[in-house]
Image 1 (tube, rainbow, N blue to C red):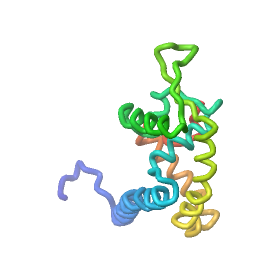
Image 2: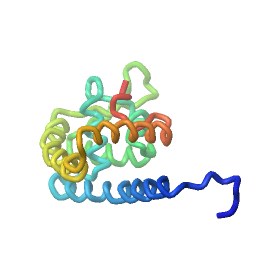
Image 3: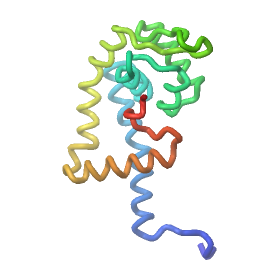
Amino acid sequence: MNDESVPWLNASEAAAWVSLVTMSEWLQPALDIQLQRDAGITHFEYGVLSTLSEAPGRKLPLARLAALANSTYSRLSKAVNRFAEQGWVQRQPDPEDGRTTLAILTDLGMEKVVATAPGHVRRVRELVFNNLSTEEVEHLGSIANKIATAVGPQGACASKLT
């Protein structure tokens, strides 16, 4: 590590980096386990359904939904096909742009989100928020938003649905 042109991490940054990577690697599977056990869906799938539930009219163009889910169009399309088989989502051409397909959360899909949310929120609270003070939660939100904005063109915040 003697290349002086590289801005090496200092000890504090390295420790924070290892913690961040470890957390990001372990959190997703921990959430998947609970959601698969209790609702038969993955965290990714719950995120897609939840995003649709919060979208205006409970619908979004598939390409926009893929971007919000940090997914390829192909992966999202497979999930939406599965949701359609379950009756949770419908595909429909966008009446304003026939080249675009909308994913629309059905009433049955909304029921799935509502039924799944309490267990998911309990698990999120258990894994994340019960371990933090109010001040730490505020810092976490600010830090996570800055990182999400840096790593993704859309950021990763549901507030960017419009």
